[in-house]
Length: 192
Image (tube, rainbow, N blue to C red; front, side, top):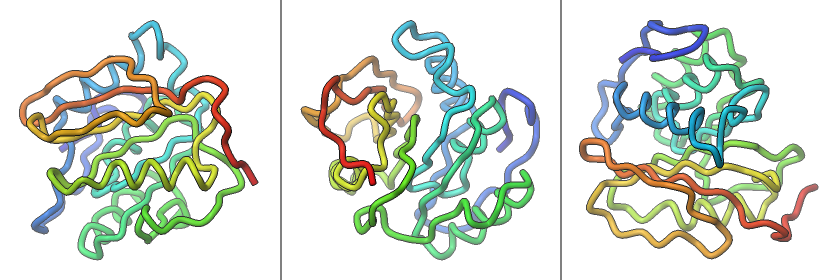
């Protein structure tokens, strides 16, 4: 597993040796970032100088890819103890602060002072975790008013995009379905 583009292109990422952690493949990440950079409703400024949130971070591959491609900051949320070991090693290898890793369950968040512009949600497949995570992020001020949300689910997993998101596009890559969306305009968000 490696970074596929940007400043750190080719840099290797440590892969987990733990069951239950499924890193986003290089091919899938390449597809995600090509869409972020080239879809007229998203790019080309979807990454540059943006605050990124990588939820269900696992190895941190999505957030680190965004950092390599010009994001100003990346925060990772993960609560799997085994995955956290790998995540901390990858974050350290990129010179990011350990404080960028939040060791907690996304479904039990507090309020945040600065919202995020781009959010990756890549939970374990077939667990139905995205909806509750999105609800928490929205209700606790983690999403900026123009936030882009990228969700990865199993290609055969059923999921209904919440009414507060506008779907932009989706792609199927191998076993994964990637859904790109934005917050609907004029939604009320609590920012503290």
